[in-house]
Image 1: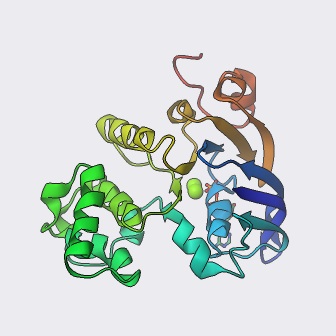
Image 2: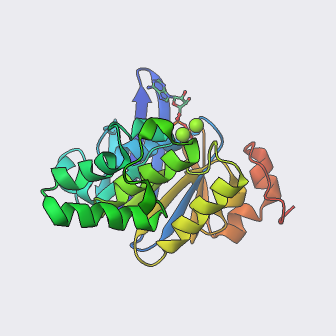
Length: 237
Ligand code: ADP
Ligand code: MG
Ligand code: MG
């Protein structure tokens, strides 16, 4: 479903991604584990054509995101690390309605779509609330709802656990678990302990894929994690 072939990317002279090769299957929960600055966010921005490879290519269901941005952006929904990058309207309802409105939904259909998305994240009662008065964790869940409301087949989460307290992290983890078997999920995080739910994980560092394997292969390899400045999950160490 997603093929990344010999992908290279640089900002100016600075090489950021070097020869990335990955295949992510339909329905998989796929983890991208790597320390800060590894290139996870940069790779994610290639999935819907925001960034363009310097060499190599990405195919989403056979479509190149750079050549087919409209089709690919319908399939791939990205939840950014900072929900403030995703929320632009004064109220929760307006923010969640923005995507499906642009896809042509109106009236009752639009309203149903918004409430359906809010229900998934447990925030139905927040429809009329003002965004600026929400906590970071609440904004995070609303940002997820804005993406869900567009019915993407592929959901990409960039550091979904960052800046959340323990309860917030658990809520997001449970939420992601809910999509198992329903959506293809890509989960980028530097927090190894939150990637145990993945079917497969790619360890990425300094713009290169170091190893791809099951959670046991990657998270269970204490030396590997330490070598890449990653915290070892407490239950494994
Ligand atoms: P990660 O998400 O794994 O923390 P990023 O993809 O954000 O890593 O960053 C990879 C590298 O690219 C880092 O060295 C970062 O400083 C650099 N980088 C990210 N965005 C830009 C940019 N807009 N211009 C120049 N360098 C950037
Ligand atoms: Mg980072
Ligand atoms: Mg990042």
